[in-house]
Length: 157
Image (cartoon, rainbow, N blue to C red; front, side):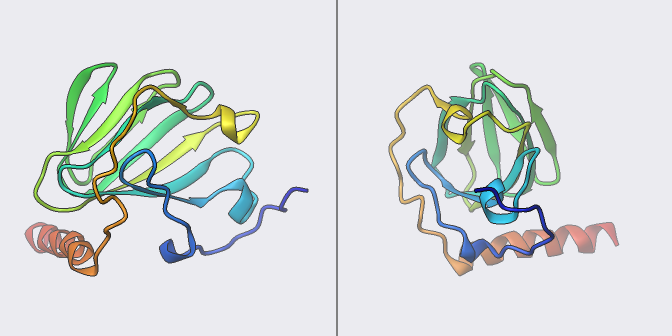
C-alpha cells in the first residue's frame, strides 16, 4: 500500500530519532510520511564529539545543508570542513562520515534521491558506531543554533 503524495507539514518531534549510526537522524519527508516518490529529506543533529558513522548510498546522491555547528565530513577518507550556510553534494557510492568538531550542537538538513528500489538497499554502513549520547537533544543547545543564526542576521543587516 502506498501513500498518495500530498502537501504536509511534519514537525521534528513527530519523527522518531534514529541513533544507531551516531547522531540523531530524523527522516522527516519520506515515502511513508508524505508519499514522496523521488527522494527523502531529514535533519541530522550531532552533539559535540559525536559523529554519524561512515556509510554510502549505492542508489542516491546526498545533498547536505549545514544550519549550525562546526562539522567535518570525511569523503572517501579526505576530511573537509563544513560551516553553517554551506551545502555539499555527495555522489552515490562515495563513503562519508560526519563529525561534530565544535563545542556546540550541529544541525544539518539532508536530502537523498533518487530512492533505492527498497529502503533497506539505500544505506550501507562501513563501520561500527559508538553512540555518544546522540539522543541528548536539548532546548538549550537548539537555542544556540537559533542564536548563531540571529547573530549572522545582525552582521548581514
